Length: 380
Length: 230
Ligand SMILES: Nc1ncnc2c1ncn2[C@@H]1O[C@H](COP(=O)(O)OP(=O)(O)OP(=O)(O)O)[C@@H](O)[C@H]1O
Ligand SMILES: [Mg+2]
Image (tube, rainbow over all chains, first blue to last red; front, side, top):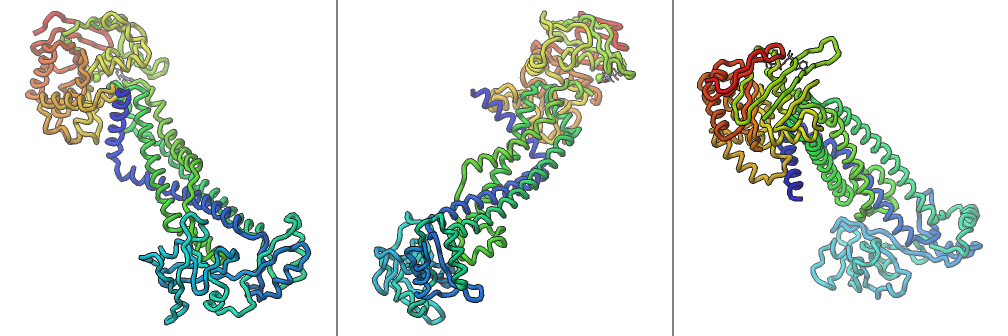
């Protein structure tokens, strides 16, 4: 065993020393390769997170959300409309909601402000319940510090914090502020009787499509958003993601083919001669190949590590900055689009194998023929 | 003891550019002796050495080492012989450029799995004996001809092989360096190593300590002197 280790160590040492001779070329190779891995891994992390996000959103989304549209844009909806919706055949429990976004200039974050439906979550008047992300964003230094919200310069509204949700509650609530209806209306200046939207249930989910179709004709000023619609929106992102993946995979394969061709044809005279020398001084074909495995392994595994770590930082620290143009439309629905790190171990493994194995093979295969040739060519 | 019987070597067999490098060589090389192969350029000296050192196979004939046939052994065993039994100093040294003297010297030990520290210690001792200690970390392309040769000697001896083979070792050396090389050969001979050297340099085959001189011409042995020359 220790003989095996010593041998591997000696082969790896030689490989590193030999690669060190073409430091710039090898570094450039690793960087180009890492870039390919970076793009693939970014798309992969991004997709995994989106899928996670989708499950979260879908789990919490009501079956049916009704918005009022004026000139194609969402507007406040009145209580009468809620009654109208409740009266549609097949619809039950139509309930108006009050919620909105608040941009916090102090922390630069967007909070979701809501009037809770659940009486247990209803704070006393003048107080709020907040997600754990808010004290963090605000840098609260002590428990029970009040929350000051400013709507414009010179304005300051004080809310005592009745309760802070722990980190264990759903991801969606980290940026949540819950307040009473009266406080909400006063804070945002929403007149009595107007709401953000209406959520409803249907008695028979199988009929949802039919109900929505009929209701939409009867109520041209209302927009009916079903859970399926939300899913479809996500699906569009996935379609885009799949297209991107295909393009990236194509580019990666192309890059790899170029590498491989370069490798296969580019067993330089110098390299051939060195292999001849190694064989002549007693290296086995096995040793030469093990040495080349080290070379291919070091390059491709190094590129894999660099690319994957950079992709992780890109997606989860820099919020997928390179994908931002595609997300712009999305941001209207979810202004504060943060991705929670989601790593699919199997995907990482696949990526790792897909990036290292072909490269290692391309490094080793052209050596094979040379390494099994007679070593006496180095005699002249 | 190494014996060759009816060894021939054809290059490019069956093609118009076929070369008969060796034609029926019968030869015995005594253990512990310093044998010199001489002959004009192209007479087959290097070819003969490469066959003895298991780097090439004879087209026909047989080579034995201590009574065992080695010419037909599978590649794996021939490799092992090259690693453990023969130390080879090439006509052009064949050091690996870009690597240091020390890195070159320890190369034949890499496949053995011997602890690195021990290999390096042995290499440094050998380099010290050859006055190469200050050059240990120098890339080999910066060495002078004499230094490169001694680096090649150190590499050939790192696995302590019983047989040391040198192909045209003094081709580019001045008289002082040639004398120095002969001293090294005599020391290795005194230490019990079998030495086989090719040369068309009279300073070598006329030197003190040479036990046998074999003359080749057109792939045949034309003259053989054994039992002490000088
Ligand atoms: N790989 C090869 N392919 C074709 N011909 C070869 C090959 N190797 C050697 N020869 C030929 O075989 C003959 C013997 O070559 P060899 O190298 O053994 O001679 P040598 O005695 O070592 O010469 P020198 O003193 O110039 O080194 C020469 O004619 C050479 O051209
Ligand atoms: Mg020669």
